[in-house]
Length: 175
Ligand SMILES: [Zn+2]
Ligand SMILES: [Zn+2]
Image 1 (cartoon, rainbow, N blue to C red):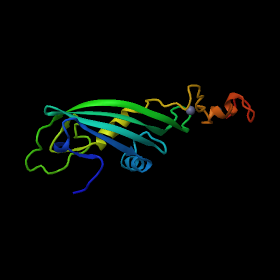
Image 2 (image 1 turned 45 degrees about the vertical axis):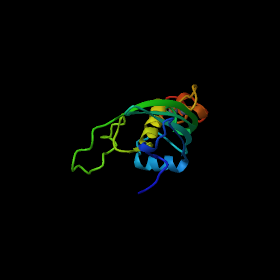
Image 3 (image 1 turned 60 degrees about the vertical axis):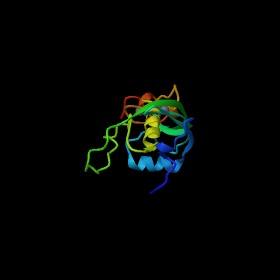
Image 4 (image 1 turned 120 degrees about the vertical axis):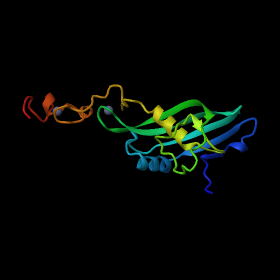
């Protein structure tokens, strides 16, 4: 049986709850990016998470705080930039239906409904991933004043005007 800091044995949660510290280091983010190329993280990322698990009757309350640094690509100029990541979350998990008898196939991430848990082992990794995804800005900007790329020539206008905008190296109107 593999041991992982992400796996919690539910029957071992003491009445006062369980506190865990998890490190989401660069290798962890790199593995995640390799599995999910659509993830909008553009470079090194690292974070620390503090998680607490408490029982509420048959339910489980999962609370956490995540803080770290992400590298995102600016949605205007595409330049990677570092940005702080900080958020807290609270999730109530309820016991899900038992797996269908004979159905030994593991659930794919799409099928896995994170509001439910089954069995006596809870894998915290998908919850942390979901929270990081929720924290990602829809339109990341390297700066509020980012000028973006020229729609005609693609030059980064933060570096100065391009030829089509009457910059030093060109005449307006020629392309
Ligand atoms: Zn930008
Ligand atoms: Zn241009």
